[in-house]
Image (cartoon, rainbow, N blue to C red; front, side):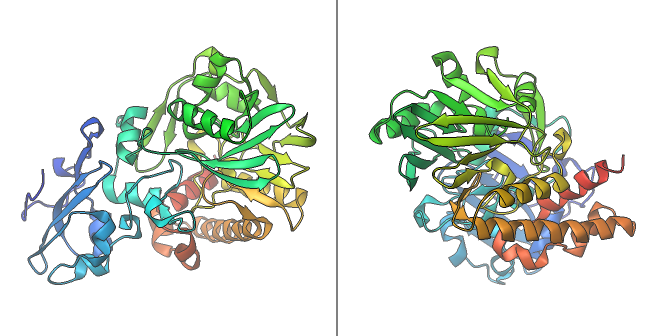
Length: 427
């Protein structure tokens, strides 16, 4: 598939070379993507990507100046140059790193940078650059997604960050996990994947904890709740907002714009046995733990978990601190709901609070306030464009996120889902 040149292929929407061929189990993908070509201001006719952990990439045949870029390692892409320099200078931010992807719902993390070097590389931009348009029938399984993202359960370790006495945040593959350890036992918020559970338990034991007594799901997406498949049968009490339990009980398609993931129904033993509608309260490990639901946001079943004694809150994917958020608009998530949800959480915490996002580094109240400001600004601009008759393509071209892109990354998928969610409100 590498080094194939087709200088005469027209860029037709229905041309077979524009159809994405997902062979994720072999970790190979070939494509032609006109949007990516426009972004590069160059016409490489075909590129091949091996999505194994040590990724290789070949960008072939710049028809403008007849040059070729062969970047054997994404980590060294920044130093790569073509004779004309065009592919190098106009490269996408999404190509900065493909090593050790740590995140499904928004962004990639490069371990080679260390804990302080979280790269805000939008998964949306990466997948858009790699996959182009995915048709409705191109549903991906979990194995496909794992291969596409290069997830390596064996190689990835669990890292822990202390938030307060008895409260830590674990980072691994999937969403951030809050872990409360104390005299009453162990309560965790989100549980990643069953393949990571032995390492999660080992880290808990290292910190003085035992078996996991309670696991709270901030929502039903697989990178936050798939660990239920291990914990439920073992006897841990699973807890979630009622809508999340309902979603776990059936199959759902998560539309990530550049790809569509078919999340299968969980077996009954992996469903939350304890649910609530708007609020629930624990008294656990010498502090009050409040579970609050402020309406549809990232999904219809989001939960914010407040550790009152530790002055900390876990928002799940309603707050993404690794880039632009993903709004599951096809399953009831809304941009307006995310703004309301985040604002409600902001009103519950003080300026010294620790804020745990669904993805990205632990942060503070000001970061959440800045995130809300970004959401409100972008929402207003997209709404104005829609009121003026703009379609999605025009909204993307208007660049309503322009001044935020440096901080948050590629906005394409965010704008798409925001536009879609606002449009659904009119239906």
